[in-house]
Image (cartoon, rainbow, N blue to C red; front, top):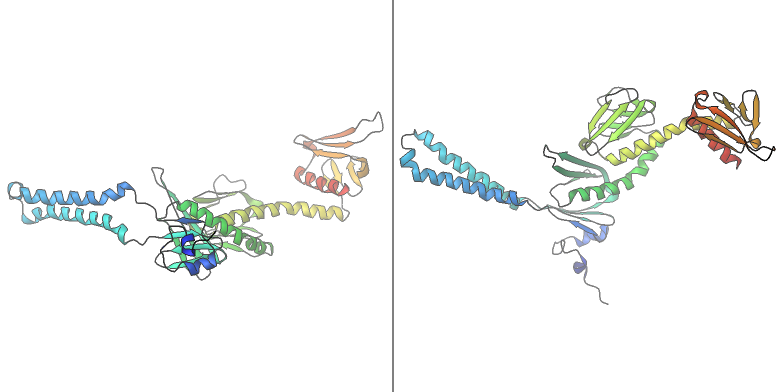
Length: 358
């Protein structure tokens, strides 16, 4: 079967546009094309309506000038056709402005974006360094969405008056995260401060420009990120420690993933230190229970690891199971949780030891 020419294989929204083939050679064939947003019918009707009102005002003035306005001062009478003229000018602006606005098309390709506006550009995914999104909701609950990307050469592209622009923004954001997140985490791991405009993250904690010292990870209660704001809460405080608008922060999803990674790594640090101490031969105390390489100390008695078939850390108690030679039934040692300290670390160390014993 004969295949069509390259121009025939293009989506119909791109056919007839000169200069796109060389760019698509770098980007790959598009799988989705986003076209200019349609002007609402109300907005289309607004221009002619304003012109009609202006014509009616001027026409009424001319028709009834001798009857109604002959006793007015000239400057008072001149005010009425001036108002009509202003209505006509506003109407013409509403009607003609869309015709002079340059319409933007964006094609999503395998390796990046084909941008068609005043100029045609190939935006490769791996050249995008920053992505901003701005989501606003008015007092009637209507939401507007726009986004912007910045490339390594500092060129920027705004996506706003495009049909399904939020869907386009989500696709761009997904690709940006895939390309930027691995390098960001690698820089974090070696101790680099990772900036996101007004906010920065490092192994110490979270830094915000308008605050002095950083908020250490031990003091971070919660970081909430929604479509419009980033809210950071400090341990033991009711009010937020800092709130920042998402519209000012680049790569918000990368920031969210980095914070989640940093908190996970920070939470693992005490357990890793405890495991290292255990492997070095130290005894690790958890209130009524002490773990060491010899086994588990419970009071004056030590249970060797070979005598233990399982340890369960529940919400109310810690239970140690060991097989019994009497009637073939298991024996249990039970410790109320009030006698145990650092239960999450105890569970983590037990999981490590028992996995190592298997």
